[in-house]
Image (cartoon, rainbow, N blue to C red):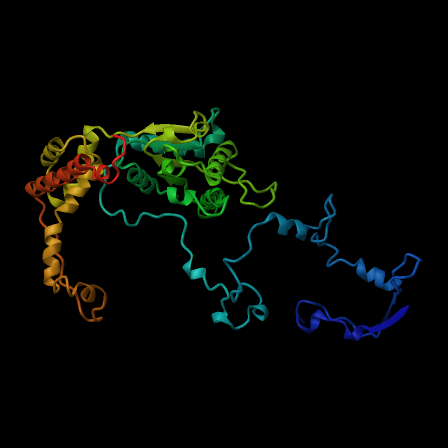
Length: 429
């Protein structure tokens, strides 16, 4: 049996480092005797502690502290807190003023979180939407009603679908009209795209949706602003086209969205459940072209409210007139343009205006030195060197008609030529 004598003066004294946080302890010479027996002893008592040491071992941090309180499974509060929370505090890091400077050190600019300034803001604001735009009344009523119903769902005695699915033809302004509604209502949404619904790691897209949903909930709770989750072109990420393969991530994303609909206030991102972890109910809006390609139970009535958006003649004229109003194009001229190019999506009329800029941009390139000096003039010019002022072209109905006929010819050429048949002889018609 080995006998060790340890004087208390050699033990760690926290008051030496933190004199203001720990009261001074009288300096008394105390002897603790630890009796250690060999592992070969047969008495069953491997360690023997003195009575004074046993009292010290049972001493808590504070008589009023609940940190060491055990639950029914024998785990204390700190253990449960670390297991339940997924916050690793990486957004704060060792920042001076946030934690004790003794541990923050003086390295990496006194800020160990070197990627903090490069993080993207998940929510979307609409400062770039300058000017006066037209929102179709039917579209406005549908989106506003869906958002308000979800925010007052606890007051209604009806089943409120969490998801609003806006679908329709290509280029009809589904996403842009929705963003205009967000701007009018003062909503700060979280917007996702179909490209985020797939990953090389299984489960990542589903977890991302839950994290974005909780982020929108934090906007409501912390900023006092309305928010929602919007997923653009969801059928491109979840739809089944021909013989496309259903991946594990497709299944997890569908299951995640169905679970959000069924439990909109209990959303986990991987941590254990806490009774107080109640998430705000956040409406979800998805856009797409063909919802028949999506898993049918996800789009059933009760989970998703469907809205087919096909602007009529009056809506198209009003939207295009607001688009051309700043150019001095009258409403009657807009009506003639729409009648000249019927059965076109809304983005066609935006492409008309963009095509009229081509001639003036070519002239501006010549003014700054031509194609040969384009890179040096745009990217490598001196600080005091300014580019020639670009003057937008004066819009006329004749120029818009010319651009429209040019776009129509390109559309017809693609549909009639079909060069793929020349390269793949066995392709079906």
